[in-house]
Image 1: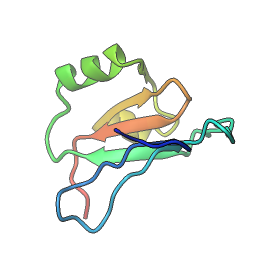
Image 2: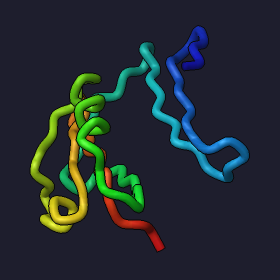
Image 3: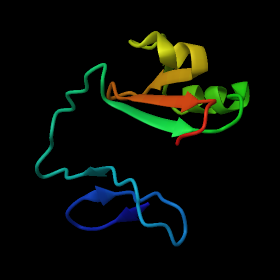
Length: 95
């Protein structure tokens, strides 16, 4: 995690990739999270979801939930983070 004097910042992405995921927090100007059932971060694994992956997410503060859209329950697992945002681990590939 990169921390500077104004905010907390974490950048996650593949080395040499053309994208990154950037959750940030500014303690001087906090924003109240307002997730909806359609705010999903989907990771297409291309393989079955391993229970160990789900257990690690739960140990880090997540909660396994039923998906709003049953498609995600058929092809993956949904975990909601402490702020209410949903991560879907999908067994299918994208594209």
